[in-house]
Image 1: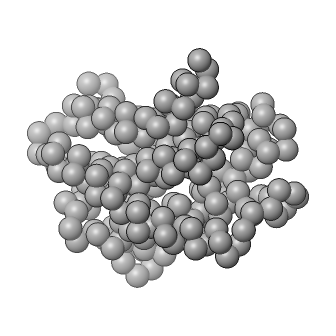
Image 2: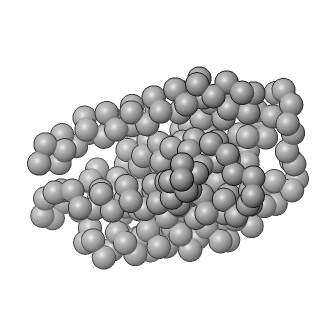
Length: 222
């Protein structure tokens, strides 16, 4: 029963949080139409498939190690860094076809919709990859980490809009730093320090929620 709930959490955490976001009272004229945001989510979902080819190539090149610092690097590239950079690169490629402006509310929702769709499919791919070998790291920690990462990147993305030149590099650096940070609790999970892994996974999510409430207090109060 617990595993079924955790599996459901893995599959639905990003789509459900996206639905919650678009149902919040943002106010007329401040955000794109709901249909536009839903379309952006599905564009992110579809862009996962060509992005997944890149992910598979990188995994093939670097492989995976189960010991020491190489384990940390393996978790970094497999579960955090490459999927997130592929998602942001896909966002850069499609940005002219997405109704995302420099306005903070529109930018946040548009970026979250696209990245959320991409990373939701990454969660599905992971559960298929590890079929029959599911554990708490895959079913619980990874979806929380990816939700936190998408939320953080979406909150800061407007500062680097329109994501060209140096600003694009800065956004990729921020995403890389987040991936590096989330690989720490991932490593602790693999070396049987589950309590510390859960703590270091949940705290950033709470921080992301707090930052969201500070950036959009009127929406939260409403």
